Structures are given as C-alpha cells and as structure tokens.
Length: 78
Image (cartoon, rainbow, N blue to C red; front, side, top):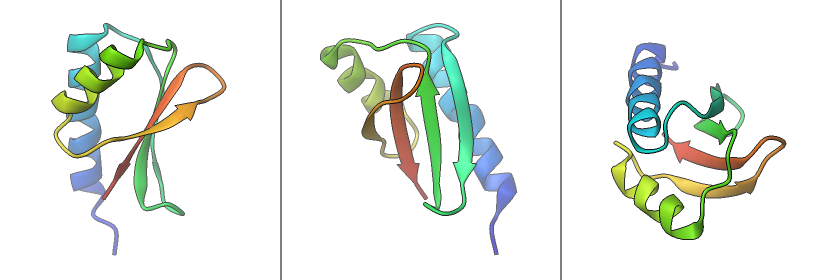
C-alpha cells in the first residue's frame, strides 16, 4: 500500500528546498508509481556545481536524471 501522506510531505520538503535555493522554477513534481519515485523537473538547467549543491539540500537522496522537456530532472527513490 502506498503512503500518499508521506509522499506529499516529501514533495513539500523538496519544493521548499528548490524554492529556497533556485527560486520558483519547478515545472513538474509528481509521484511516479511505476518507478516508485518522486520525479522533479525544473524549468531551468543549472550548472553542474549548482546541481550538486541542490542535491545536498534535499531531505532524501536525489539522482540527477538528465534533461527533460523543460529543464533538469531529478528522481527521488522511496
């Protein structure tokens, strides 16, 4: 059974970090049931150092997932 309450809290924490570090630049932040992960896509493509700094701030480990249709993508496996 999926604990959506926990997923929503984690999404809120991720949104807070992104807004604090990069400003409001979230294109998509959604749970992907097939991957059992939260997927984040930004509207910007930060430099490599900024990506590394951002990943260190997230409440759970983040994997860089490349460039999506709008910008940089990250995956948070639960």
